[in-house]
Amino acid sequence: MINKNEWLIVGLITSCHGINGQVKVKSLSDFEERFLKPGTRWLQKDNEVPLKIELISGFKQPGKETFIVKFQGTNTRNDAEKLKKLKILVKTDILPKLRKEEFHLLELINLEVKTLENDELKTIGKVINLVNEKNNLLVIELFKNQKEVLIPFVVEIVPLVDIKNNFLIIDPPNGLLEL
Image (cartoon, rainbow, N blue to C red; front, side):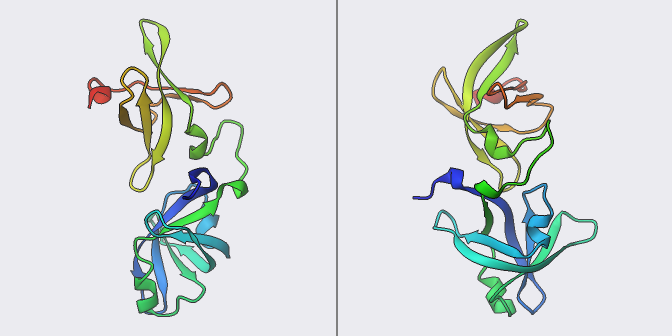
């Protein structure tokens, strides 16, 4: 089984582009160079072992959050068809350096989750996973009933992340924790 902390999903191959083996990629990353700069990447189908592949070239589609990339050995549309729905991964030990107030989504795992109730911070659970194939969602295990809930990772619901002190604060809309 793959150690999830070893890999970071940075993109999803959504479709073919043209007839020369290029694919369209939906980015799940803030770092465009992951799709522009040639080098080693890994492709993964479902939860299978990731396979190493070389990214040859890539460019961002104007006005979109998608990239057109070319991988070594993918030279025809038929080759590209086989890559549809695969995840593009990078190893977590080569993550880009961030500025002081920034963090990698992977750093959110195992943070305590707190809410503000009657002007007091109350610990209600911890982040146990991330779901980021469509939107960034935090999977939180609630301490009171060991139930897992999905929390959208948006500033309106998660106004504070404190990596240094190992917690984040959520302000969920009524009913979100009861779903």
